[in-house]
Length: 94
Image 1 (spheres, rainbow, N blue to C red):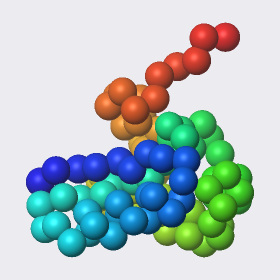
Image 2: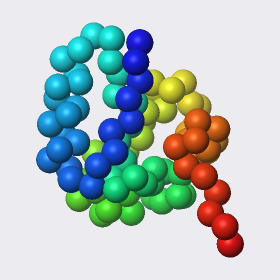
Image 3: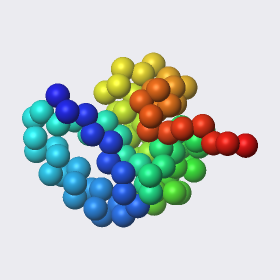
Image 4: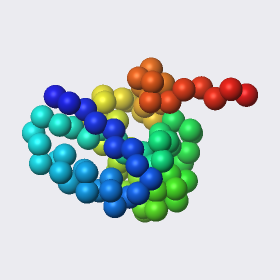
């Protein structure tokens, strides 16, 4: 199984790639991020993520819940840990 994180600042491109990838049985889209950002790892709320991605808060919640299910994360905090451990995000220098 190949796991994919879609990252692009154009929602139309992400949705197009997602549609293509969803046709493949051995590819699993685990999450999407805009402009190289893993928004849940920044501690943003569903409303804030929705605003950044120009989607509804319900859609943001659905994507987060699907990512949690696919990655077997029990909560948002564990999603953040997985994002850091996988190298998707790195700590910012203060």
